[in-house]
Image 1 (cartoon, helix red, strand yellow):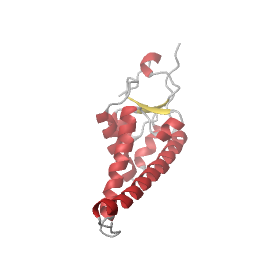
Image 2: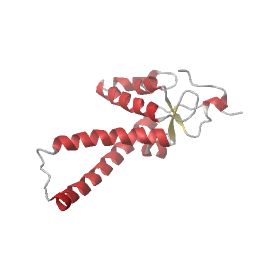
Image 3: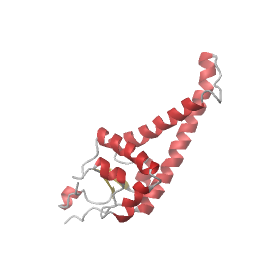
Length: 157
């Protein structure tokens, strides 16, 4: 008999997120360095720190959005989640789609913007679902857990 899904708690999710912060920042910095090198070579124009800062900020937000959305939609986990054996699933245990992953990413930003209050569900909700999980209809489970539909215990929506 399959075991019920094991919902990921605050500690494993926090450490996975910290790995993601480092990964996203390092990849963005490396990409920015390549762009800063190539722009003068290709266009002859040097990037200005003051004028191009807004563009870099927009690029960072877009990069964060794509990193999380594409990771969750394609493999169900970010790099950090994969290292800690976590995955994002739909209520029936199936992988999330691109739309659901995008909603989860946008709602994740809202969880942060609400002074972190959106994360309280990880501590107090029975399935450890944060605001962004509830909004997107997702849950974070340990990858070693049986899919909820196989275990006979679908996630409530």
